[in-house]
Length: 97
Image (cartoon, rainbow, N blue to C red; front, side):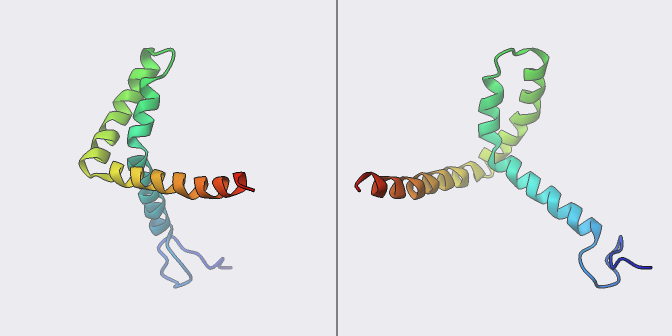
């Protein structure tokens, strides 16, 4: 009995598992690049330092550098400014009532 899914998507019922895995990996890569600088700042401020901090810094520094090189950090900054305006406007309107 077939469940309508296959490993290669050959039966035409949807995406293959391989496509789904690629999409999920692409999502997490984009999220890591968008958050590279913020995660780096967090790793730099770790309280206890030591091996855990060195591990995080070694893992995150290349992401932060790639984010800056690709100028994805500017996109993140623009999104943050937009979000600040978006949430500040309704709050200001509520305060004037």
